[in-house]
Picture 1 (cartoon, protein in one colour):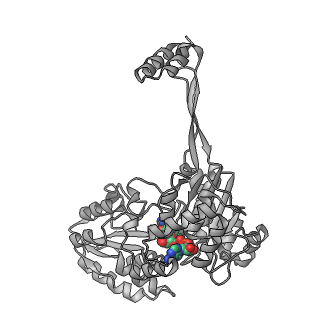
Picture 2: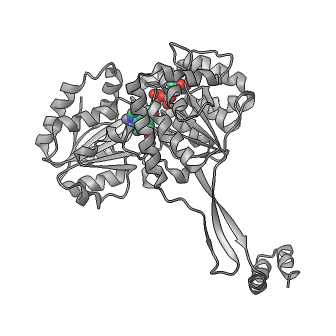
Picture 3: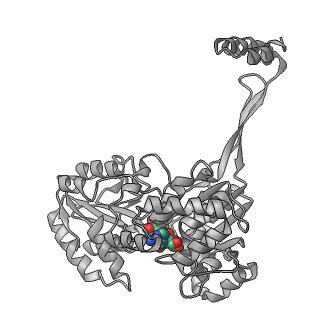
Amino acid sequence: MFKQYSPQTAQETILKRVPMDEFDVPEKLLDSIAALFGERLTPDQAVARILREVRQEGDAALRRWTQKLDGQSPDSFRVPEEDVRAALQSLSDEELNALQLAADRIRRFHQAQPVTSWFTNALGGTLGQFMRPIRRVGLYIPGGTAPLPSSVLMSAVIAQVAGVKEIAIVAPPQKQTGTIHPSILAAAALIGITEVYAIGGAQAIAALAFGTESIPRVDKIYGPGNLFVALAKRQVFGTVGIDSVAGPTETVVIADESANPAWVAADLLAQAEHDVLASAILLTPSESLIKKVQEEVVKQYNVRDRNEILEASLQNRSGAVLVKDLQQAADLANQYAPEHLCLSVSDPWQLSQEIYAAGGIFMGENSFEVLGDYVAGPSHVMPTGGSARFNSPLNVLDFVHVVSLVALDPQTTRQIAPAAAIIAETEGLDAHANAAKVRL
Ligand SMILES: NC(=O)c1ccc[n+]([C@@H]2O[C@H](COP(=O)([O-])OP(=O)(O)OC[C@H]3O[C@@H](n4cnc5c(N)ncnc54)[C@H](O)[C@@H]3O)[C@@H](O)[C@H]2O)c1
Ligand SMILES: N[C@H](CO)Cc1c[nH]c[nH+]1
Ligand SMILES: [Zn+2]
């Protein structure tokens, strides 16, 4: 169930990075797409069709796809504000306290992030950069396999820290109740957000990107989601901003003999339960640790009711790789650029010096990854699919943008305008040159 690989076979299989639209999608998922769309389409093609239809037809297409994919035909997508607030009653004090603790830690962590406007007088007059919050943002909250109220906090609190004025949340309606899971609504209410829409998947991303009769479009879309959500975000980029591609969860654990095999197995299983396309990979120079982890995986496998998902994700994109040494483990991890990288080794600080491509590094067994999912402080919305080579976990900078400020004094203007005129003439742009010369 949790196979062993050599570094070479791992690189050809579980560690191989392919663009998201070329994912080796399980046959069962392709069959479900064919049944839903009436023809055999790749996930990327299916997403393109949903986006096109919502863009052209607005709410009508949104309703049609919500019916097809989530089995609901709502009169209105907006969850009434009183229902959002009332959801707080659905949680126990214990649950509310845990969410409050998480929200407080996420807020304090992000308030410590330096994000400041700055100015200089060194170039004549004043030049600088204003940091301005993005005006209206849309946050996707996953809810297909499991409702994730933690994702509300892991994105919305950061938007609040950045000073975003309008925050809209979308999450899929539950098949059983026809509306969003109350824990998601309660997490929104807990931090004072009440603009919530019960739509999910690619159709929700389309609504946020293009706007519909009932959903005003946003300036930038954030948040994690399954393959359909991630592909949709990628396809609408340009029409709106997106944070990053935060698709199916990935965890790499680098472990040595000092690691506790039961804990390593628990951490791998935890992330494998997210999605049939999730990946959970162990890199270790210890064959005996692999054996023990494999035994533990089997022992701990019966985690609640997620066996079907676990089985698929452990088969598809997961496994243990027997490496030569920890340096080779670090090299493979850097090539793969996982969302989460857990260092269950005797000296994680030393090994961390070798790592340059990962969404987040979890140092040693006290800092296990599930704490990062919920309460540590940094956002759990992290880049996947290899995009951790160039993207970052969600943070305050994602919710602001730079506006340049040019306020020159007359003396500097006179001094630099001739150079502007010369460059304009070099470019053959006479009107530009003229605009500089008429000042001289
Ligand atoms: N990278 C991160 O930071 C991060 C964080 C949290 C969660 N995640 C990931 O988020 C994902 C959550 O996925 P989920 O499925 O539970 O919820 P989801 O809300 O992302 O997706 C559910 C929606 O997918 C659409 N959908 C389902 N099957 C479809 C099909 N065959 N064709 C077209 N659309 C279809 C439906 O509209 C449904 O509403 C997981 O992959 C998890 O690993 C990632
Ligand atoms: N592991 C996910 C990030 O990839 C975040 C999450 C939410 N709830 C549980 N886990
Ligand atoms: Zn998780």
